[in-house]
Image: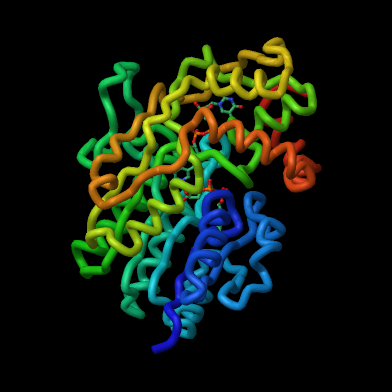
Length: 340
Ligand code: NAD
Ligand code: TDX
């Protein structure tokens, strides 16, 4: 028997990138293939420590390119597929929804067809708590796996659509799938369009931080490494056809998050700028992870220390995020916000 082949899509992005490193280091007995289109959100320099390892390979491809994907799957006969690749930013989905449907919906369906043809042992679809829509501010309410899907943004609607298609391949063709729905991640290599790295990078440059609306919207934060360990567990132990929610009970308002970062960096709260609210802005997300905990998952990070580790990582890895803040990002930022 040869080594097991694991295909990770979107492994040049934030979470997929952390997952690829986690798997390459943890499982020398697996060959890890990272398939990524290298969009604005993808970057391979993060993999400098693993790129020469014998169990790591990179393939540049578009998941929505059926011919290329079919040829690759036929050739490599992957055992497992862990599917992260997506357009992931809610604000971009509000200004340009089309590519979200193409990548997140069609791209997922292309991967499912290819996986079915070669009878993969497991297809893990990495989804999000945003498919459930929003909760109100009652702290006793949570998203469970039974919460009805009710997405608000074009991003979350495209993810919800892909979840439904993935589930249909289980019901119709008995494809061994799992769907995971995680809360907001934070940690190393988070692209600086998202709240936490945007705040860190702007505060370090003494620039204003745009806070949407009144800053009271709540997100449930999970360290990216805890997300990786959860997916590893679902890949190996998840009951086929099942959905697993992932979250570590770390609810914070956006304003609390921004103030924590400003405080740790010894800067002034005058950097906070309240700006127009996001269209369709979900009030609150909060995950009930009981089902995953019953499978044996134990998260390692709490937010109060994890956020400090993350800020320190950005301080130590200035050269990684500084290059991302160059031309394309500045154009995006100018269009998105009325701030310098
Ligand atoms: P990201 O935007 O940082 O990375 C996405 C990666 O996918 C990039 O490397 C990009 O180049 C690649 N990609 C985009 N379109 C592609 C295509 N057509 N073909 C191949 N590759 C393509 O995203 P992320 O934050 O790492 O999120 C990864 C996954 O996790 C997504 O499916 C997202 O919905 C899900 N998720 C994210 C969070 C979060 O907090 N960031 C939480 C829950 C779930
Ligand atoms: O400039 C900002 N100001 C602000 O107040 C930005 C970028 C965000 N926000 C708010 C909006 C949200 O309430 O902060 C919160 C977090 O925003 P994002 O970082 O854009 O994340 P979110 O919209 O919650 O979605 C993220 O978590 C779930 C990921 O981007 C998704 O891919 C994932 O599915």
